Image (cartoon, rainbow, N blue to C red; front, side, top):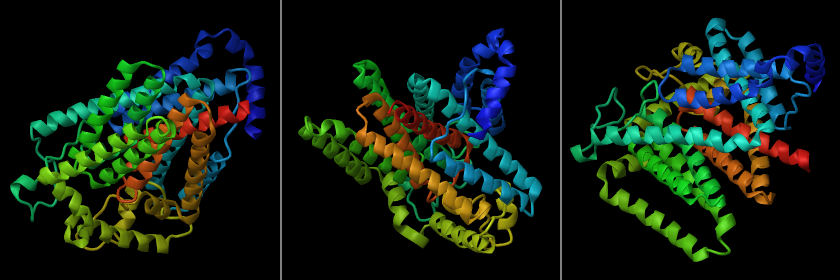
Length: 441
């Protein structure tokens, strides 16, 4: 990579400074603390604070690469798709009719991608820290789960109109929990659970493989509690994402358990199915919420999304090459020219359509290329590697990313920093493990 010659030059020139600086020699420890802090702060702090901490981690990563002898960038082949995506976004920014608003969205993109580079670079040199990072995500999910349970039992009032109650009986109205994530929104909390719950299942498997059964049981309990509270959010898109998570967990478990524990595995699967059917039969509010997914235009929320999809598609047709510029504020300004009266929207309610509208068809192709090749490499690793612990880490990341993408077909909370940072961290887990495996082979 052409930048590595520059890094080698600066490392040589700054070698004396590095050799005599305890700070520079231990900067990776501070980067690790900042990565963990991003997840912990995401539960209670604003987007600006979370982004600022992430940018510090990015800055320190650059400092480390410029000063630490032998440090360099060695991207995986699927990261070339990500580089192409970023370059297209830059071109889209330059061509945007609302440059100042697009610039704000662009800086968010720089923050997220920079954080991804920081986590990848850190994990490539500290693969043993993956359990700690998954643990930080798991702790945050556990905290939000507990908060959600408290909100449910206290029957917390809605902050805005989060469900269509015009055709519901009182017992069919759900208390939709929203946790502590800002801005308060049950769909955001649902998406957060979709992103984070796989980390808890991964920790459970990791501890079980290490024979730390107490830690494994605790992780499993937090995962189950997270699933329960996910359904209490009333976010129907996250319901679908949760089904993807559970399917993924069962498929990965089958790789290890099917031959020796086939009957036990099938009994667990049957029990979960019976439990789900029982919940739908006896919990009226949940049953009504789930069945509203299939109500199409009869449900006001569904109808609203269909109208937004139609308007967003028209926006894309008119700006298919470079898009309108990245950022939700930019989207809102342009969307006003296309929206149906009374159907204002913050986003396209589909992350792929949103990407196409904001940055054009080639940005969408590049982003899809990154996802497809990365997931292909991750799944190939899961199927072929003999390393159980690393299979568990990559499985958790793959399941999380696929679940987020499925949820993203009907919502765009994916673009909130609380979820974005988990997404890029899961992508970094796949990248670092696959990279280390390729180096050893």
